[in-house]
Amino acid sequence: GAVWPAARAEGAAHAAALVPALAVLPAAFALSACLKSARISGPLTLVVVGLFALVGWHPPAADAVSVVFPPVHPLRLGLADDQQQLVAALRERTTRDARILIEDADPARDGWNWTALLPHLTDRLYLGGLDADAHVEHGYCSLRNGRLADRPFADWTAADRSALCRRYNVGWVLCRTAGAAEWWATDPTARLVGRFTDAGAEVVLFELAREKSFVLSGSATVERMDPGRIILTDVVPDENHQVRLSLHFQKQVRAGPSPLVGAVAEKDPHDPVPFLTLIVKVPVSRVTLTWEHP
Image (cartoon, rainbow, N blue to C red):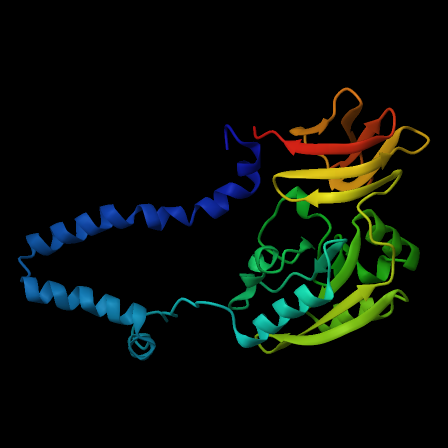
């Protein structure tokens, strides 16, 4: 947290999972010392260790032990059939031209966080819905608990919702509660794509009939957009020599070719993170955005 500001907001909670992992070896030595001091025989030691292994890998044994001890649930491996169907639908019925807004799941529900794998499984761009516990400023535009971007559904006008979808280039919405699905169904641009299930609960996918583009002013073609770099071609600025993008600004972003192109921050009245605007002096055939790690 002292050397990387982002760690102060989110890293500490996630790094806490390392504590038991790092404690494995010291705990093993401590347990060994206790067994030796108690002069427990080798066969009995094997029985104790085998009991723990049995509980961890054999569900019926875990259920029997849970009568006395807290329940132990085996680690889930792979996706369920309904989750695989949802992944296939997202790959077939969406594109990388816009983001998919996903409603955050209830963290109290078992297995809620599998959606963190969706960017890797589908090669799509997402807004919210991947980690409900990620309390970072970049997650401002989220859909959860009957609220969009931390505003109750009832406070949104049709014009406000349309403006937000353009600002964040939302092309699809995946609703995981009936209330959110009913609210998005009132959007005249929303078209029902399909109904699916996730752990027995219904999820609804809408497509928004709007122009899908990461370019908010000026014109450009997105040739590449991934964690390594963003490449824009046929870049033409607006009358203010700007190309405004539906991307968050970071101090470490570098735009080229320099000095024809520069990256500046554009403050948003609601989002705590500014958006990225390119200052383009003359039309250029290619602009490359790279990230310089701190």
